[in-house]
Length: 386
Ligand code: SAH
Ligand code: SF4
Image (cartoon, rainbow, N blue to C red; front, side, top):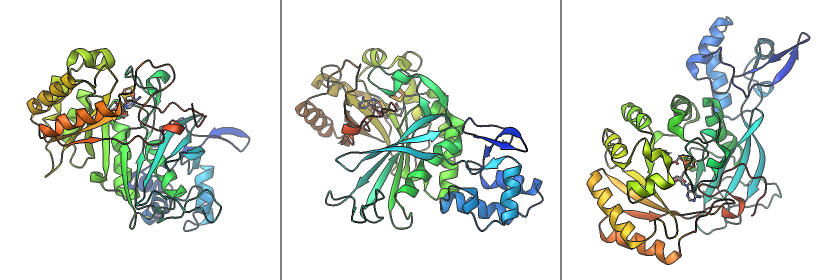
C-alpha cells in the first residue's frame, strides 16, 4: 500500500532531484503506524497524525504542531506530503447548494454541498467571507464522486460524456468530504451530515477504493455508515460484494426504467445485468432492521413518465420483494442530451400512482440546477449557468 504512487502526488526538488511526494492523506491508522514504525517512531505519533488530518482537517504537514518539527522534516525528506485534495473552484446556487471542483492531481473532480435550513435562509454571510458560519443550517448532505468521469454511458447523464478518465484513490474520495467539512466549519457532534456517493462515476466499478474511503470516513473522520448512501447503476458483482460487508452504507439502485427494453435503450449496462439479475443480487443483502433499498427512477418526459410505466414499476417493486422505497428524479437537462424533462403534473401523477399501490415514494428536489450541480449534471463545467 505504501508503495503505490497515486497520481495526485506533486513534484518537489529534494537534493537536486525531482521527486514525487506521496500523500499521507488516505492512509489509515494501520498504514500510518507501519510507516512510523519503519521510521523508528512510536505508534502514538500515527494517532496524532490521523487525528490532525481526519478530525481537525489540517491541510498541511507544517501546521501539525503536535508532531515535532524534526519528524515533519523527516517525513518530507522521505517523500511524504499531507496531500489532501483541496477545493479549486466553487459555484453557489440560488438555493444554497454549492458545487466544488476539487483538485485531484492534474484533474478536478466534483463534489456538491446541499444544506437544509428550516427557513431557506441557509447561510449567514454577515462577516463578509464566503465561509458560512456553522449552525446557519440544520443538516446537510455532501454528494461525493468516486471516479473522474464514468464508463457506464447512461444516455441521459452528462457525466457519461466524459468517459472514464480514472478511478479516484481512497484519499481522493474521503478527501472531498474533509475539504467540504473544513470549508463549512462543520462540527460533526452538533451538525447532522449525510453522505451520498452519487457524484461522478460508478462506485461499484471502483469498489476497493470506494470501500476503503468509507472505512476512512467511518473510523477516522467520524461519520457513521447509516448516514451514507451509495448509488449504483446495477453492477452485480459489486452488489454481491457489498452484501458481504459487515459495516456498509445504505444502498440505492438506479432502476430508471419500467422494463428491460426501455432500460437497455437508456442504460447499456442493462445488457450485461438486467433488472432481474440486479434484483437477485440485491436480495442477497442482509438488510438491517427497518433498512430499505432506494430505487432511483429518472423520469424522462414521454419515455419513462407515463401511467403505464408507473404500473410496470409497481409490478417490478412488488415482484422484487425487497424492503424498498422509490425516489423519483425529474430529468435534469444538459447540453447535447436530447431528452425532455417531465411535466410537474406527470411527476405528481406518477408518485400518486405508486403511493396508491402502497409504495413509499419521494420526489427528489432538484438542487443547484443553475450551477450544474443537480443529479447527472456533473461534468466539470466551469460556468455557473447554461
Ligand atoms: N453512477 C451512479 C451514481 C451517480 S448518478 C448511478 O448511476 O447510480 C446518481 C443518480 O443520478 C442516478 O440515479 C442517475 O440515474 C441519476 N441521473 C443521472 N443523470 C441524470 C439527469 N440528467 N437527471 C436526473 N438524474 C440523473
Ligand atoms: Fe455513470 Fe451514474 Fe451517469 Fe450512469 S448515471 S453514466 S452510472 S454516473
